[in-house]
Amino acid sequence: MSSTHPGWFAAATADLPVLLSDHLHCERKAAENALSLVRRYPHRPGSVEALSRLAHEETSHVIQVGALLARRGWVPRADTPNLYARGLLAEVRGREPERLLDSLLVAAFIEARSHERLQLLAEGFAAAGEAELAFFYGALAAAEDRHAEIFLELGRVLVPAADFQARLHALAQREAEIIGALPHAPRVH
Ligand SMILES: [Fe+2]
Ligand SMILES: [Fe+2]
Image 1: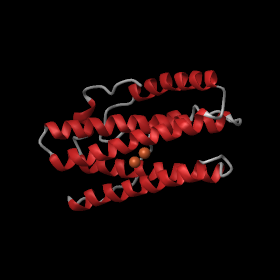
Image 2 (image 1 turned 90 degrees about the horizontal axis):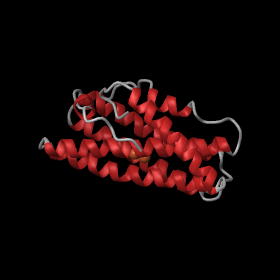
Image 3 (image 1 turned 180 degrees about the vertical axis):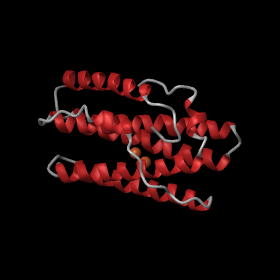
Image 4 (image 1 turned 30 degrees about the vertical axis):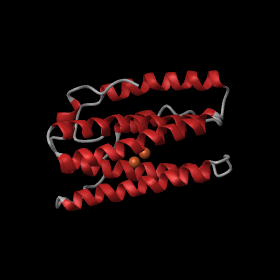
């Protein structure tokens, strides 16, 4: 995966209530996406348990982000369109099993990018002496890394290994283009 531009941290943290509101909705959408995969693919071996557990953990992240906002006296804002996720979802092909494979790979990339960004926030806040925020983002970053692996595991069994690697590579390039074209703003991505 490509690395986030060094200028991103300053832009992302320029408005902390807005960043945290966006983050809250990212966690909510991660939970919803996991449950929507349960709705669409209940018959996939292991997926009901793995995805429901993931949704449960994402929901706990919504609660944690909401609690941090509340501790600081900030009210969550309404969600705004996420051009990053929208760009990636446009790459999902229409026929099965490609549709499921792409849905899982897109989810894996969003998790992996979230992991990278939350880790950057943890490191940046640690350097700035913001201990509460550094600890908060460090804990969430570790969870998102595990989530990316779960989606990759679910996708790996769907197609031959060479096809899986080719699609992973193609989507990695597309993901880098999409994230690289977006302006830096107070949002996770
Ligand atoms: Fe999360
Ligand atoms: Fe996640």
